[in-house]
Image (cartoon, rainbow, N blue to C red; front, side, top):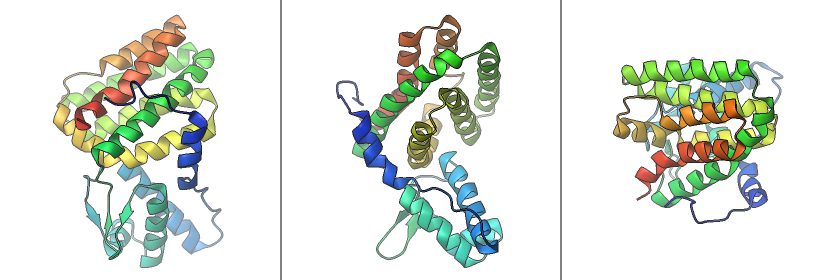
Length: 236
């Protein structure tokens, strides 16, 4: 089972992941601005599950995708490999992550550790406008479910979590969390296609209810369940 009986030190997790996070360089010329744009756009696509696990990418294909030369494409790939969002083989082949069960379990355990903490820190700032916004995002998730739109589901599901976590005012923790989301993106695409959901996740409703009630233990439990239950289906 994922992370249920395992105690993990948050500081150790942060030390483990932090080297994969690189501050974006300030654009100083056209080339730098181009590779930063490609990096951010490709990172978003990977995180949202627009690519399947183990899908091969080429510098030429990336350049054509974003209408840039090989140099910005190469630099964007280099940064995404450092982030764990892409893999680079010894032969130079670039692919999206294809995670082992052990790696899925590790990343799910990290989510179970950090995301409830972010939600807990957000709780004192969970005003009614935030709760209404989360309800609206759940409605958008329901539309993606009805359309069997896997990518739309992942995108809006992450928007739900990010909207809540931004209220935590803990940018370093959120950056670590997004690095995990990036690595899991293609796997989440495979997972949601398998789940064939028919409604908004039950835990999203529990999260909103806990926010309304100011129930911190209930909020932590709902977030932990939401971010690990699906992944448990893969790591078996």
